[in-house]
Length: 233
Image 1 (cartoon, rainbow, N blue to C red):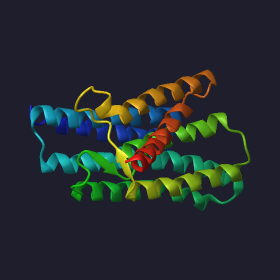
Image 2 (cartoon, one colour):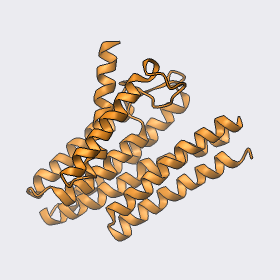
Image 3 (tube, rainbow, N blue to C red):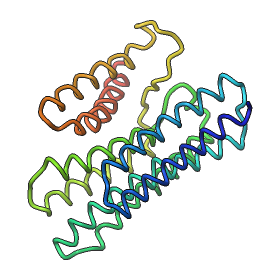
């Protein structure tokens, strides 16, 4: 039973690898998104099972970080690479696409810092890599399917967001956790607020026939609420 968390982490890693393949080999943004979401579910379950079974270990911790680099660093990097590659080819400047791999590099740095930072036991400093991954996995297909503007503007927007995302991952910006120790509103009001706001954003996006935009907007809402929480103390 003590190997269950590590097995679930391996499923996280496997899902992340499939997301990379779907993005790079088949240009499937939706398929990659589906497996990143699946990896996020496995990432939640491996931590939950480790706590329930009291089977936390250094091996499990390192394996979890390795899986997260692939699922939440390399996989979204592959999605952004494929998108930028198509746009850059249209513009005649292919090298721009390689900036996408700043995502796995900064995700690895963020995870390494997290593993040795004792301040991040109940909250986070910087944007968690699963949230960053979900943003890109939904933001890129949203641009691809719903936005019709000149390629130069799309490239500029993606590169600007890429710079902000990389900075946020390794920043000292405090961000609240969605781990519930109780169901009380007062103790979890920010998490409940995010859940309610996310449901609203997903609903509005679905009504506007842009369902994937609701996911990326929910990540933006998470960042905004974290900043507001910090200012309110």
